[in-house]
Structures are given as C-alpha cells and as structure tokens.
Length: 450
Image (cartoon, rainbow, N blue to C red; front, side, top):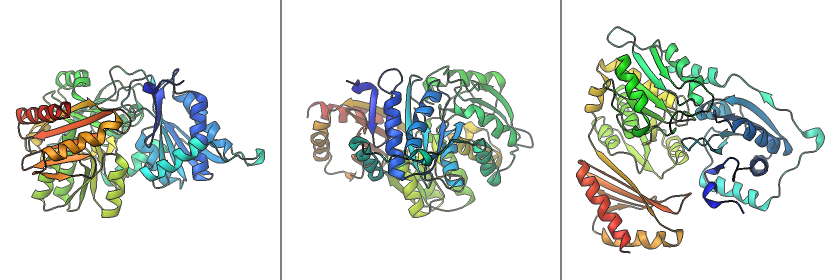
C-alpha cells in the first residue's frame, strides 16, 4: 500500500516522494491519463533541476507517446516558461515536472492546458476520472511519435519580457542586484535576464544541479544567505526564487526581507501608476492591494485560492495585472502565469521610475501584519467547523466563496480547508501584529471547542 502522507493525487496534479510513493509506473499512468484526456496532439514538457527530474521526464514521455501524443522536451526551465511555450508552439497542453517549494526528495506533475493556464477543478476532475478508470488511448506502432527537443524555451521567454521592458537605470547608474536561485530552474534564466536589463549582478546558488542549499520555499527564514549577500555586496535589492521560479521573494538594500505579499503589492503599484485597469488576486492576499487600487480608482476582484482561479478571472475581466500573495506576479501581456522573472522586471522598473531605495518604496505601502496557522481537521469535520464559525461571527461581513472569510474595516480572517491535507488553513491580517495574533487565537480556540 502506498503511504498516504507521501502521495497526493488531487485536482492539483500528482505529487509524491521519489523512491517511496512516486514511482515510474504511476507517473507513466498519469501521463497516459493526460494524453488520453487531450486526445493526442503536441504536449510540451519541462522540468526543474531536481535530480529525479530526468527519470520522471522519461516516465512521462513513455506515457504520452503510448497515447499517440507528440512530446516536446524543453528540459530544465522555469514553470512559466513551459506555460509560455505551450501557447507559442500551439500545443494541446503541457506538463511541468516540479514539486515547487517542497523538499528535494519530492517531485510532481503540474498539468497545463492549451492556453498556458493550469487545469481548473472541473477539467482536473475529468482527468482524474480517466486516471482511475484506466481506459487509456493506445497508439498503434506506426502512430507513435518521437520526442522533439526544443532549446528555445528560455530565449523565447526572455524575448517576450524584453519586448515590453528594456534596460533599467537608477539615478543614472546601473542597479546592483543580488540573487539566490536555490540552484533551481531560475539559475538558467534569471542571470541572463538581469544582464539584459543592464544590472550588475552578484549571485549565490545559481548552479542548476538540483542540490538545494536551503529549503526552496522563498520565505524569510530561508533568505538568511541572501540577506547577508545584499549587505556585504551593498546591493540595491535582492531576489530569491523557489525551485521552479514562479514565486519571488525580495530583500531590501538593508538586507531585510520585505514579506511575500509585498512582492505583488509593489508590482501592482508600479503598473497602476502607469495605466489604469482591473486587478485580480485571491482571497488570502493582503488588503494592501485594495488600498493601492483605490488610490488609482481601480477595481480589485477576489477569487478562490489557486493560480488558475486568478488567471481565468483575469481573462474574463481583462485585468492588467494579478497574482497571489505568496510572491506570485501575473502580467498577462507576457504570460498568464505566476512568473518571478516578470516580478523582478516590474520591481526594478518601479525602482528606476521612483528613484527611491527599495526600503522607501516598501515603507510607502499600506502596512498590515499577517498570522498564518494550520489546525488539524479531518474532512468529516470541515463543514461543522465552518458552520460554527459562521454562527459565531454571524453579525460580521462574510465571503463564502472559498471556505469562510470574515471582513472587518481594518482586518480580515480567512479560514479554509486544504485541498491536499487534513488541515484547516487560517490566515488573519490586521493593522497590528498583536491584533492579528489575538484574532487568530480566538478562531483556533472556537474551533477547539467545537
């Protein structure tokens, strides 16, 4: 029996531990499901730098080829590059082989549709039905197509960014930029981008060997080395990416992490200062986005958690920018994907436009404080817990789009079940750290008494 804790098959794709639950036969079967779902055609495949990536890639191609699909191998590249190339090549879909911010022993498949966005929940359910039924399309020998190698992924991605934004100058000089790519997929693209933007570069962890020097999630506790590099090199800014380079964390010239949500806040403020339009983000992203948009008389639309929920709404509403508060910036003129390279470009151009140090730009953002907690919660108790909280806060403004969000004038709390684990996620934001902590403790206590 496969260990449940290390194998997760869900609407998000398939994820597991190599050498434990995520085996080549399972990967091939999942790829067969996707090939059957797409009913043949061209499928673009790229991977991050994990040492298991080559093995996973071959298992995936075996499954795709067996269904008559034409596999296109981008090899190592950022996830947003895979998404961009699906559209550029007119492919039926794509597969990104990456476990993103998970530890190095994990790997996963993220499934991409023809418009470069991930599958939505309805499409994923249809795919999972094919997977569980096991009735896969089978190509005859003369219909099996050989894999095509394509080395144009990163150059095409760079070209698309540089088509919109050129070199940056800050107070008449080149910006000095420090980067930490965690030896991930960004190692092959981010230095090239910064050289094209005519920045002076100091870097750590830019060898794409899949040996992560620290946990790959770009959160403050994993940015110690980058903070030190920024201070020692007197860099103007520092950027950190996760293993697949879709998320971006930023360190100010003082060597201080600015916080995940401020990545998107800076990008939104820069873009809205140049043009007006709709912004889309999810329910757990900082209220600062709404405050910034209000200054420019622009609309903010909130969605369920999940990149595809943001991108689908952006398309529908013709939004000019969007993203998620975990450091994911989506700029549709370049890519309908969370893209750390786009985030880097927008922030550098904002610095150049403002002529101010990054720390000053961050100080000018609306100030909020986050508390994020998880509470064990079996699926059988999710409804009763949410009903209890609805009753407790019945006099307050609520949003039931995704779990329960309670809204107050200067604070909010979002409580929702995880899609992949038996836990409840609680996010509270307030004007003071103490207020956020007090409310989070109150919610957890209510759940404990339920």
